[in-house]
Length: 155
Length: 155
DNA sequence: CTAGAACTTAAAGTTAACTTTAAGTCAAGG
DNA sequence: CCTTGACTTAAAGTTAACTTTAAGTTCTAG
Image (tube, rainbow over all chains, first blue to last red; front, top):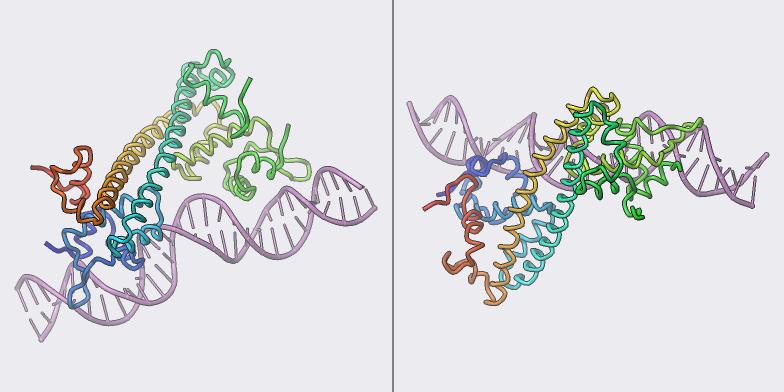
């Protein structure tokens, strides 16, 4: 089964212009053409496209992804490089996960803050609350929000 | 203690031009000015800036953040709206977390893939491996990568 | 009182990742 | 054969979030 750019775009849930753009940027050198010049995506190209999609979600740029594709097309000589690339990406994702976790804590705190404000009818309730009255799990983030990053929130 | 824009920028680890840009976009209406027109950040403004930073990390646009700031300045009448905003943001973050988790699984799979390729000296080793030989935790993601999203990878 | 570092604004420039447009070509059904 | 919808490319346009520049002002230390 082969697909035109429009069909593949629909299948993947992206715009056809996006796939054309990716092709122009060298992300799809594996896509063949008909004698008339029309892109013919093969079933097996879906895996490439899924990997590209995942790399994008991981925050990689088009340029970085192209490097990977180029390495992959060079064959088994670049296995080490590709492994190193994904190992680095693993670290990046761990970092992102930690940051997201932290952002989540802040939003959880803000939800508690406005729930408390809602009950009392004023933000003064949570805003002026003593640290000891604040639920234990929000104390750290509250301290952190009230000081510059890197500023010791100690003693 | 008050800070100029440059001092506050340094404290937060951002460019001064960024703070000026945020101010122009209405994100910092709480910052006062000297008689000569120079921004004077107060200690308590740090909390505002930290919240703005967290909202940005959560993927909110400048426009959305301005809405929040405007609501906050309107006072206690907007508590419900602000609570709703952070509750929605909680959902968005949960979604982001799930996506990041999924991306991580893909990268873990790719690391396994290239480790296996490295041992064997060729990507054919992992590429042509039977599903049953693939470590159990990578089977689902491997199936998924090889089909279009939404395509049932069943039976 | 003055030098110069840091501030001010408005406006233009940058970057990434697309999207749109324009002018033309391909391919399938009637 | 011809129409029509989807394809092609190159080039220009879009958007968000900054950053840089230019021209001028303010504050502080000597």
